[in-house]
Every structure is written in C-alpha cells, then in structure tokens.
Length: 398
Image 1 (tube, rainbow, N blue to C red):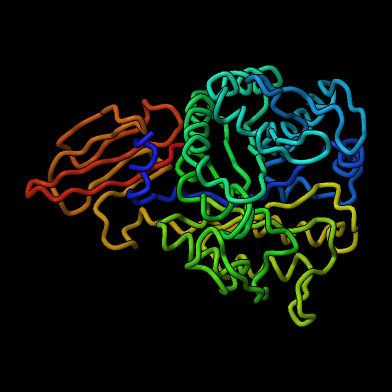
Image 2 (image 1 turned 45 degrees about the vertical axis):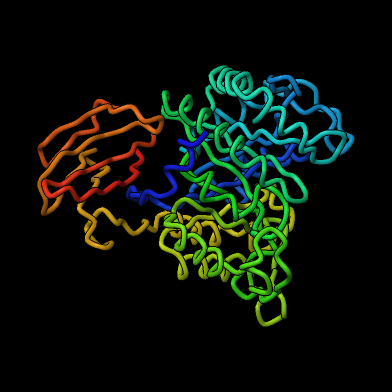
C-alpha cells in the first residue's frame, strides 16, 4: 500500500468549478423528502444543489451491499422504485444522484460491518457497488462509514478501498465522495484522515453540522493528535488551516450544516441562520462547499424560504480560485481544465503523465500535453527540467 501515501507529497491542481452543495435523503424520510422536492416549497431548491445522496444501502458483511430494512425500527423493503424516482428527479434538475453506503446495523453504526466492506472483502465490495450504480444509472457514490474511538490503524485499508472504487467509477465519469467527523481528535474517519483520503475522491463532507461553525471556541484534549489539544478545532478557519498545511485545496471539502435547525452557534452572539454561516464559509475559504443534513429540512423557517435557496444558488456558483494561473509559488506545471491541456511555463525538459498506480501513460519533450485521450480521473504530472529540477502536480480530469 505504499503507493497510496506517495501522493501525499504532491501538490494538488485545482480544476475550475463551482462550489459543491450536497444533501441526503435518509431512510426515515423518503416520501417527505420527495414531496418537498416536488411540491415547490421552496420552488427553487433544486437550483442550489449539486449532489443528492440516497442513504439507503448497507454492506451485507460478505462483500455485497443491500437496501437497509430495519433503520429506526422501520421496515422499508425493496426501494428500487424509490431509487428510480429520485434518479429521474435528479436527471430532470441537473442534480447528481448518489448511492450512499453507510454502516448501520441493529440501529447503530457498526465499524466491523464497515471493515468487512473496505478491508476483508474490498474487491468484492467495489464490484457490488459498481453493479448497483450501473443498475440504477446513479451518478456516483458517497461513503458514510462511521466508527467510534481511534481507528487510525484502518486508515490505509480505507484509503486503498477508495482508490479502487474511484478508479472504477471514473471509467464512466462517476463521482466519489466520503464523509468524515469534524474533529481531528475523535471518531473515524475524521479530519485527520483527509490527507490520506482526498486524493481518491472528488470531495469530502465534514459532518460537523451544528458543531462546526466559525464562532465555536470549544477546545479539549485531542487524544488522536495532541498537537491540536486545546485548540478550537471545530471552527471553519481551523479546518481550512489544516487543509492549507497539508496542501489540500478548499474545493475538496464541504462543511456540514444542519438542515433541521433554524439557528445554531454558542454563545448567543454566534448564533446565526444558514445565511450567516454560509457567508462565513464563503468569506473564509477559496471554494469550499456545503453538506446539508438532510434534505427534508424539518425545521422549516429560513430553510424553506425561496430567498434562502437563491442565496445558496449564488454560493454554489461562486467559482474556486484556480492555481493553474501561475499564482501559487511560480509552480511551472499548469493545467487548463477547459482545454484539458497541461503546460510547462518558463522551463524546458521532459513532461510525463503517470497513473496513480505508477504507469507512465504519456511522455513528451514538448511544453504542452493534451489529456483529451485520457478517461476522467486523477493523474500525476511529473516534469524534469534540463538542469534536473523535478516537479510534480496532481490534476483531476472531470
């Protein structure tokens, strides 16, 4: 598994894109969510979303996946018709509909069930997920495996699982996201895992919801990373500084916000609606998105107002800052996602395109290289100048 970690030393290129806004349909509010999306209250909710996760699948413990049947003591049965219903809605409204695989068992999250999928039966699970995505013509996959305690010994297996799953999804231009806990101090996976997971997915959802906001000054001993003890680890700005420290671009992260709450934030002067917290995310980051749990928006209030979704649509449309324009440390490797062209600026040498498993796919002594013939996915660009300077950059072709 050493090849998984070699990518962590590389600099990420940012593809020009709008911010992601993801939400979910939980198994306990399927019809409520569908009614909300279709009754026009608010009328423009679809304009604010980019991705909608159907949180309805669980591992079966032997490499397969199945619909959840017993969540919160509710018998759900076969959900095929419901999947097709939401896929049709997503297709009609330009919202990607995602298979969300989570590890609920006996009404609680079970890390052993998650391990069966990403560890013991890794290849079988990837095949099962891909088959289900193809069966329903879904647009991608969201992995929501949640565990208590320190599970960092499982990080490499989890990363390898994402690597394999992403490779298969990208063959057909599908999306992969993963959900993590908001603090680097507890539970799994958490913010501390992002540097190991981000290379193998399109974005990461930080499940902070009502805990994560810029005014949260709470601090505590950090058992999984003592460097962060007694710091305000649940602030947007802390998470951004963590991403910056690890050379991870903001567009790879969606900050969780609670769709069930009108106001959140303590003390009272930090309490805001979604409009205030969204403004904080926009002002503090260079392209981070939002993850709204969940789309039923049970609180109503500001969440159910069309003007709110006008603002969310504006937020979504705000582009990320691109580092391909030569703004970042005069890095000689630039990537133009519109033309799918890699360019070397101000130097001569050998340019190579390498797959994440180390295969050289293209090589040239020219100062440009086209990615038109390559499938969507993650690639490593390596450049060796004539005086033996070496540079690497990771690019994502969508």
